[in-house]
Length: 46
Image (tube, rainbow, N blue to C red; front, side, top):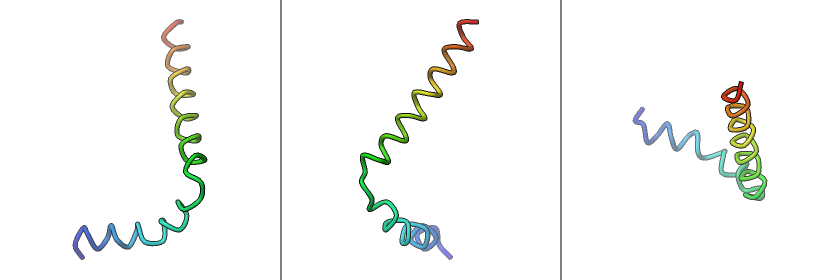
């Protein structure tokens, strides 16, 4: 099986899941980024 075939298999059903509001997805990614950043800063300030 080629890489393209594998990618197609994984991306196929996922498209239905990601069809939900994108803002929801963006919010979760930004939240994880900020929490990671704040955690880094707090450990750096020690």
